[in-house]
Picture (cartoon, rainbow, N blue to C red):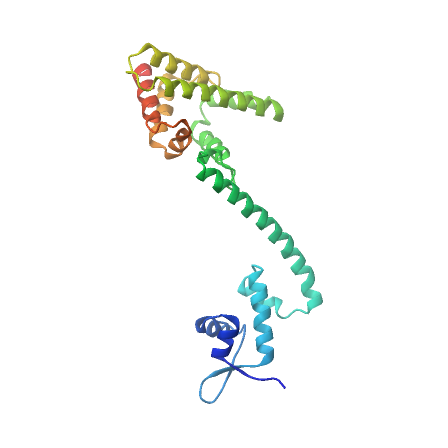
Length: 245
């Protein structure tokens, strides 16, 4: 014999709040039977339906989707659940990837190196550079050069440039305790400028602007943090400004 359940009993069994059950009643997802005294009561079938709702909700279906899915037979529901299983496997993989990148960030990896965004930061910076410099002949020359390379050559070129700039920034770090007038600082600026001239024929004015962006753009501060000198961006900007303007 089926039995009725009070609202409080349903709350105890499922762990749901009164507010949630009232909401499900209000939208017709789980209508309650109201007694003459105004209290809500639920049948055995209502409890089964509610457990089905909670199952679907745990599988990341929305309330709107669940309202439609409840009308389906188990046979009709099966292919939909199989598709959802595929999506959940992908979501788990994405979360595991984000967890790994979070661990890398907490271990000190710069934000720019993390592959955690829908569009990686390096790609975002590339798009930003195109918007900022895309119409200049210098940037167009750089883009034309990269376009002539196949994917392997482009990767090798980008790796070479990354290594080149890493050497330059290591040199800036080495001389950062010296006054701007020191010959070693002048040499570091020249080395930095030469690295940019490998990309395109940048004017001193544009180079000075780039150096200043190291200071006011917080993303660069995060990148430079790997060199262990949080004043390095300011030192580079001041050194470049000193020699190129």
